[in-house]
Amino acid sequence: MLVGGCSEFLGRHHGGLYMGFVTTAVGASLLAGLWTPIAGTLLAIIEVWFAVTQAGRAEMYLPLAALGVGLVMLGPGAWSVDARLFGRKRIDVHGR
Image (cartoon, rainbow, N blue to C red; front, top):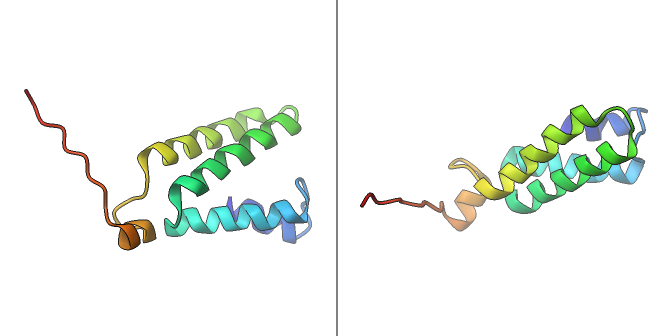
């Protein structure tokens, strides 16, 4: 997302300049682990949008959309900014 957003500023426009700002912000927040559920949702929405609007390239965008959905469900990692700000959530499954 970060590389794709930066390529918007270098002349390869496929979503517009505004989309370049959005994809760069989403990529940077995912890299830092800031607002992971929101950034993952935006990642999934943007990638599905790209898969629908750019015919013949869905095999590249749909796995990235699935990755965004997975990030929403898993949440931030142990070294993310979200874990430092809001605390690490840990789920313990006890045996019977």
